[in-house]
Length: 148
Image (cartoon, rainbow, N blue to C red; front, side, top):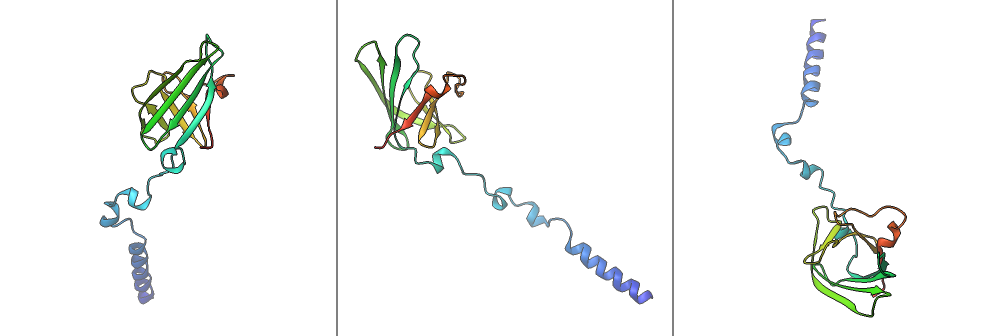
């Protein structure tokens, strides 16, 4: 009987040791080596470079015909025309930058609102604070990618 208790005790010790907590080496590793960061964002996952067009709402004209060309990973061209006012087309170019999340671009050097949320084949014109526009006109603030 005494021999059986010793064997059970020894087996229990091995089981407890095998199921113990993390070793010193495991506890000092960075979680990113076990679980890589989520790298799914517009900047990395989408084919966003290209031309986006649409007509944005305007308070004192028939609309603002807008074309934004994302030339490459950092350069843009924006053309706007105030419909019903005159035929003049305003053009500006420069660089754009991404937010930390990799989903929103800012057209540097442009007057606000100058931010766009990048989505699959479209970009959403954001308000002065960088938020998506809501309400019944929300769909009017989307520029769609054209075939280049």
